Image (cartoon, rainbow, N blue to C red; front, side, top):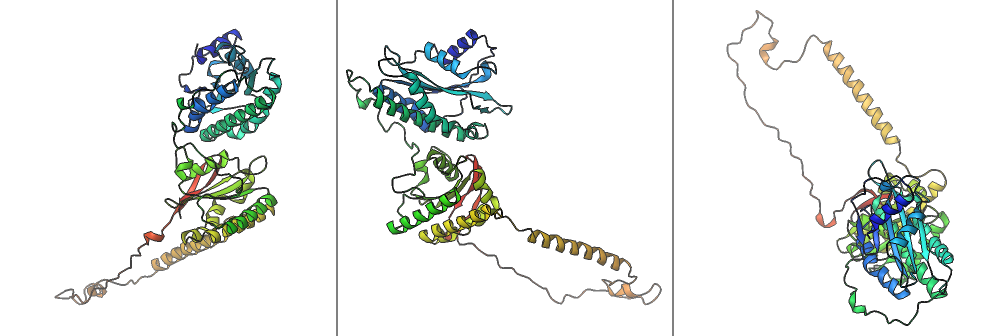
Length: 450
């Protein structure tokens, strides 16, 4: 019995109002997405490989279900859905049917997107008494997944951000279940492990990776553009600035950004890495990151969080990149990062003081004054010319009064030609670069070449 039909039967039993079932459904192995919008290469990999392999190892059935409210009434309880689907869809490992499921109930929005309310997700667990306490397991998994269910990630404004949050929630669920089972009720060893050759690790290429490592928390130098001493110094500077302002300041060097992406340009890759690594500080995960991809000299800046976007608005971002892109064009990596960090410190300090970097109104005032003067001058000149009774003539005979001198011959004589030439400046392609504003991932930024 498929999950869609199961959900409808459950709704009938609960005496809920039903509608025509939605046709847009995607299944990524053990991950079921009724919105048909959250899929990605990594989610597909998790559903078809990572979750089933972990289920086999822990002898625990692990499932992810994303339903929509198009078939049920507004007062549907997500845990009733989770329990019914688990009981009637063949979930559970072995005879005891041990397992954990993460269930989301997405609400349709007027613009055709889906959003997740605070109480519209839950963890359902089934654990035999011989293995442990299922409520303890449910609480452990719930606490691990909760940070990725924040309203901002599921408000329907950015489906990519929601997809990233689902990947993070799935990963958190896998880690929490693994730690709990291994610590409290490890699986039986009576059954041999399956042959690993059945699912080759090369089945899914270009799975997004992480920037973090044990030695890099703010300055991610995966291309080795800095010496160890330089990177350690810049790492310490970035950490001090971030902690002092409660806003993460990051920079990343990579060989080729496409290796870290499941599709999209350098800007999308940057915010995917930002969310994937859970960068940022505070509840809003405020932060700013610049990513430089050395293969084609691609560049992106991403700003996230209310406080960060106050300190680095669109004008501030454009002005900020002028402080370091010049260094990067000249392959001065240390100087570029140093200028970037110090300028970020300056902008954050001004934001703390309630005076964030903003475009000065002086230029607009000057333009308005000059335009007003030009307009009033033109009007005065027109009035002055209209009061003259004598005007300059084009031909000589126009100066003769009627009935006066009559010219017998008229002719024009060519004397000279005035030619004006302007030099056309050519840009040097070897040093050209360009950036533009971007948005997405719940924040804003810029991208281009350096």
